[in-house]
Length: 391
Image (cartoon, rainbow, N blue to C red; front, side, top):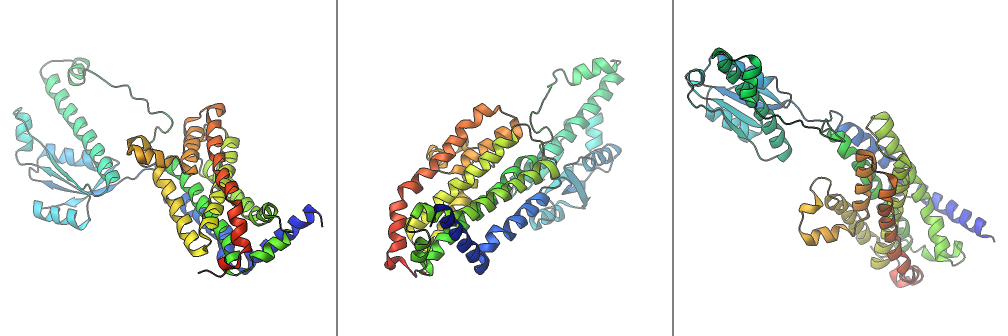
């Protein structure tokens, strides 16, 4: 029996198992498709806007109504309605009906015209940091614009030309250039990593189930027998369908991101494709380590799922790794997704030259080594009946 026919027999056996075990088949087909569709739509708007706020106008003057109109025209916020008193506004804020309160004080217009100091109070919920930042930015921009308009009007009334008045109001201007993602679009930043993250989770769970079910249902010896006793050949025949399926879904995800959703791709598409394949294989090898060590499918699925979810928390996407505790920074290096996330940012967002990202592929490849070291342990658990039938 040739090696080719042996691998063919293993592939046919594994495909039959995929058909027989519904969760196994779902991990390779339906669930990746649903996750890609889900993350293709969740950030469709790109930037959160029209966040609801309540406004309490205690002045009801021409200037206060002008300020109200300017606030309502700000993209980040939308005035849900005017309230009659602060107690009602606070109740709406506590209920979550609004995310902020804007209070225009009495004599607002009078104080401005008499050059007396005045202020507009804002109460912003800090329960959601993203909303807090967007509302603060929108209200601050509106207040700055309103103040500048009042100052310009006052200075021009004193006889200054518009150019002279502008120089007095804004003596220093900042020429700001936001690189790579000038629209601060969350879809451009998050989706290219959310989609691969889900595929990696499915690759981890499918690999653990593929090997763990051989132990759970005491068919491991039959599996090795089909491979003529060669564990490496047995692993190739078992894991090839998973690897192919996950890589194909990775290509579908990248095609969806950069060609259907039209997310900018500034670097090498081939680098991302190769990196996606390497990170899938890295997590599949780590799945081999987990099931070899525990020899328990249920426990291995729990550990594998927890490990992959932690990968996203430690990759530095939502909270910078450099700001984490030094011990957590070291821990993040033990997750292949950390290097893959950096690869995606470099190639998709920043357009880094390919040569500068090759070390990231090398770092992900190193995660194959622990699986090679644990092959003797895997042979032990697949040939010893004491490891069979565990819950």
